[in-house]
Amino acid sequence: MKKLISLILVIVVVYGFSEFFGDRIIKGIVEKNISNSLDQDTKIESLKINYLKGEAIAKNIKLYNKNFSNDLLFIENAYVKLKSTSIFSNNVEIYKVDLKGINLNYFFNLKNAKINDNVRSLSKTLKEGSGKSNSSKYFNIEKITVQDIYLSVNSPELKIKDQISLNNLEFKNVGNSQTSNNYKDIIHDFVNQIIITVKSKVLKGNVKEKLNIIKNIDEDVIKKTIKEKLKINKEQLKNKLKKLIK
Image (cartoon, rainbow, N blue to C red; front, side, top):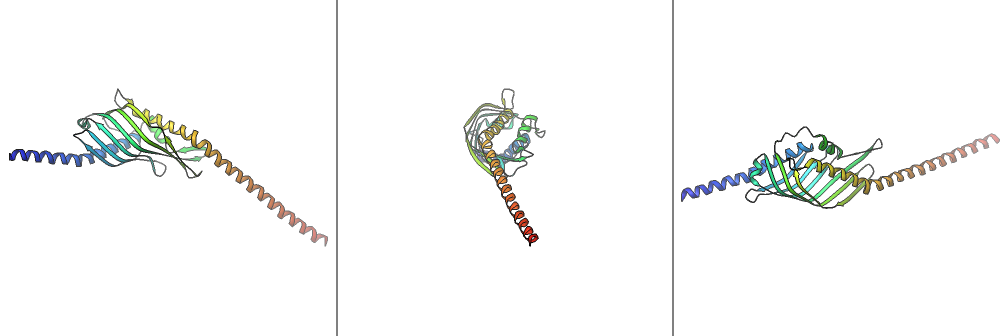
């Protein structure tokens, strides 16, 4: 009986150790792998893994910008259903991923009449590779659902600040295994769609409006300045003629 109780205590301690320290270790590995793969610093506030149920819940995931302030991507909640034992293998089997509360921050400015934004570097990395990722793990996600997506568009220079609600998304068989739809290609296509959406719904109207305002202000200022100078010169000329006549 004592041996049985001792065995149960050992199992409980080992399980508790793996739950507490295992989550921290895996969280660090996941952060590092995402950061290296996308060449963007990534932080996860909390990660809880239930090894018996094969579930993982991550909260407040942030993907930071490289050359702009604030974060590029914020995910409030991520639920993952997976085969627990595969976590420690070279082929991670994930049944589904549910993402909720997504905020994409699109920052841009105008430089030499060209748009410079915070997603082009990510798009380039996805296409050419970061050169930092050395993970040998493979993974496949059978189904991904993404809900409550918002795209925030910001340009402090042009004083543009707007938010667009995007449609929910669903993807199947996503990963980096031979049978998967390459996750980098999917993200790359999504980034391109963001750029198209911004250009069609926000930039086309707002930038034109801002430039027209600037143009009108410049014209008014120039006209007013010219009139004032002509008036001053005219008065000065009158005064000089009066002096000569006297």
